[in-house]
Amino acid sequence: MMFTETRENPADKRSPSHWVALAHRGIQLVFFLVVLWIGACFIAYAAWLLGWREAFSPRPPAVEGFLPISALLALKRLLLTGQWDDVHPAGLAILVTALVTALILRKGFCGYVCPVGTVSFWLFRLGRRLGLTVTPPRWLAWLLSIPKYLLLAFFLRLVLPGGMSVTDIDAFLHSPYNMVADTKMLLFFMPPSSTTSVIIALLVMGSIFIPSFWCRFLCPYGALLGLFSLFSPLAMRRSPAACTGCRRCARACPQGIAVHQLRRVSSAECNGCQECLAACPEKDCLSMRLGYTAQRTCRVPWPLVGISMLAAFVLAWALAEVTGHWVSEVPAEMLQMLHQRIDSIVH
Ligand code: SF4
Ligand code: SF4
Ligand code: SF4
Image (cartoon, rainbow, N blue to C red; front, side, top):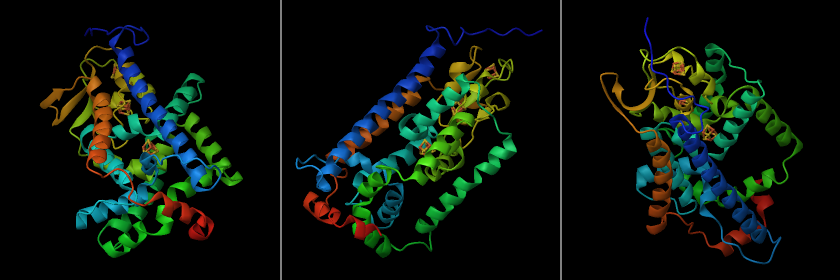
C-alpha cells in the first residue's frame, strides 16, 4: 500500500493553496478595477467628443485593447514595414504583450488580465457554488470550440500572405471608420439593443452552466493566444505517484481541463491561473514547471506567473509611453470633428 503525504486542507485560510488562489483572484481584480477606471475615463472623453458635456476629459489609450482586429492589422504592418501604428498605438502594444506573454506564460492574458475572462471566472464559481456546472464530454467540448477557430481563421485570412496588402492596411488604419471605432463600440453597448441584450444574457447563462463558455468556444482572440501558448515551456505538471485521483483539480479548472488525467497540461485552453494547484490536497502533486520533457523540468515558484503577468503589462505600458508608442497621434480636435458625423462614417 502506498501512502502519500497530504497537504493542508485547501479550505484552510493559512495553507499555501489559499495563497495561490488568492494571488490569482487578487491580480484578476486589480486588472478588472483598472479596466473599470479606463472605461469610466473613456465614457467621460466620449461624452465630450459627442458634445454631451463641455469639459474636456483626456482619452485613456488603453481602451484600444478592445480593438483587436485593428491591432492585428497594425501588427502585420509593423512586421512588414517596421512602422508602429500611430492611430491606435496602445492597442498594438497590448496585443504584442499578450502574444509574447502567451509564448512564455501560457494564456496568462486570459487568466489574469482580460476583464471578460475575469467575469467568466466569477460566473464559473457562481455556477459551481450553486451546483449548476455541467462538464461537456471531451468530444463535445472539442466540437463546440470549432467556431472560435473558424472566426480566428476568418480574421487571420486578412493578415496572412494573400490577405490585405500593406497599402490596404494603411488605408484602413487611417480611415475615419478605424479612428472612431472605439466610440462606436461604446455606443453599441450604451444602451445595448434588445438583440445584443439577449445575446449577452445567453452568454452569461451559458457561462454559469458551462465553465468559460464564451472564452472556450467563441473568442477568436483567446484562440490565437491559445495557439501561441502551445509553444510555452511553462506548464502545470502532475505527478502520478503523488496523485490520489480525487479530481479536485479538474473541478476547480475554469477551462474544463481534465487535469487529473494529464501529466503535462499543454492544452491551448490553459490560462495558467493555477486554480487546479490551489485545489489539490496532495503535497508536490501539481506544480508549474518549465520544460517540455518530463526529464528536464524546473519547478517555478507559483507566485511567479501572476507577478510576471502584472510586471509584463506594467513594463509594456511604461516602455510604450516613454518611447512614444502609447498615445494616438490623431489630434483630439480632428476626432471631435469626425464624431459629429459618426453615423455617416460607420453606416
Ligand atoms: S478567451 Fe477572449 S474573452 Fe476570454 S479571457 Fe481570453 S481574450 Fe478574454
Ligand atoms: S489547468 Fe490549472 S492552470 Fe490551467 S486553466 Fe486549468 S486550473 Fe488554470
Ligand atoms: S492532481 Fe488532481 S486528482 Fe490528483 S490529487 Fe491533486 S487534485 Fe486530486
